[in-house]
Image (cartoon, rainbow, N blue to C red; front, side, top):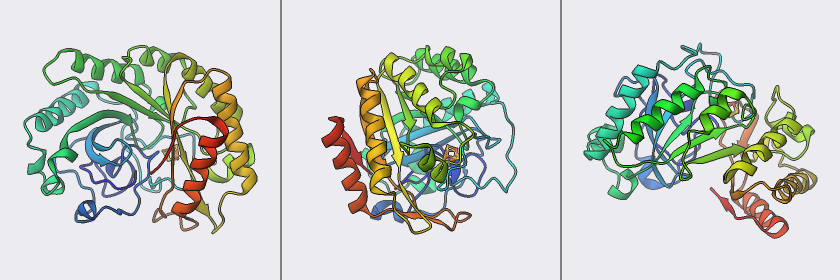
Length: 311
Ligand code: SF4
């Protein structure tokens, strides 16, 4: 996630510590307010729940890390999660997560987040809660008790002890067709959102960027599956890999896949185009220039009629 600061469940930097899910890797912080803050830490000693200022959420996002074990079926070149360090438990302890989430929501509601060092000097508008994100140090739909997590978060919301909040699932789409995921998704309200990763329009490009165990055709099929059921946001990250930008054909094919999804009935509200900075353990990945990102977003708008925003 670009331009963000956070509390974090159990890691010194990167991953869910510094972002709304590892799908949104921490990047250099352009905003002067945010650069004033230090590395993400975990002042609340949480195992699952953290808070970040998220650029793409336009403010405060409370995250639930569904992958303390760092499990993922992608190995994105830009991923912030350092899997050389061991992960933790694979299942989310629902009781512990629920207590942490309620406590964090209470802190926000009581305007006490500011008492945590990383949030102390932020303007009030950045501390208004925008969402509760289901994300993590891996792919959240691989969490063995995904449905239970969604049910508990939705239940906490339904109790009405805190103001209504939007739930956002941030996913690489690979598990959207699993029965447990589908059961969980059925618990979401219309106000909730699913943000789905699509970084490439060809298998070759996807192999270069995502190194996934899952083929592109399955990702596209799952995006269509969820996009026909509910409105979605597409998240597309374009890094420089070994100093090389995505080629003109890479971009043309990517835009074509978006158009095909739209024409097949996927309800895509927004395409988020962004890049990543070099994770410490991935020296071949760098940030793509804003000019190139803007050109990609413009192409998406022109060729597909979809909304596209650069972050
Ligand atoms: S999909 Fe997996 S490998 Fe890629 S950024 Fe997200 S957590 Fe990292």
